[in-house]
Length: 73
Image (cartoon, rainbow, N blue to C red):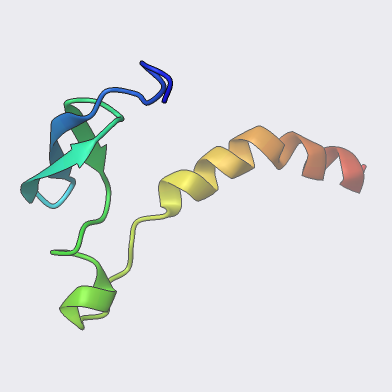
């Protein structure tokens, strides 16, 4: 087997936007930030929750909004 083929594996601290933190193993690094975890995701909690996607929609409109206005002219 070839040496140094795989990236190094780290004990990572995963931090969610809801405040939940847990340990995991990852090649991504020592600290990982996520928006949704098993403590706040509607599939696991059974509660309906609207995930804030307004930021993504605003970024899309900012990036591609000029194209929409040009087509209407």
